[in-house]
Image (cartoon, rainbow, N blue to C red; front, side, top):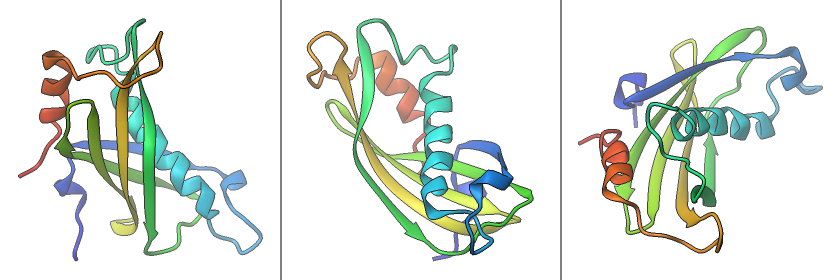
Length: 138
């Protein structure tokens, strides 16, 4: 399947650091997860979206990555994020990691909103669901 950064409503750019590479000379596979996390958290902690509050947080309950190409240093990467599905308390995100226009990895992950005090899942309020609906494609 041909992937394009244009398929993702949220795009974040990150620098590849020398320390992200391994002895094989490419970016270590564990760093891919960090790039995906940076994009997700830039959505969650964006003050204009007001998703994280004193009484609610989000946790990852499932995370999958398919590696498609190597990433190199020096350079930058672009991470595209979109919402595939909203549940009662969950959000299914699809992400793609690009370098120089080439898709190097895709990720599917599930976040669940929890009550910060009880640490149990909590239903998405309408204003929160609306933010994630805006990140859906199709």
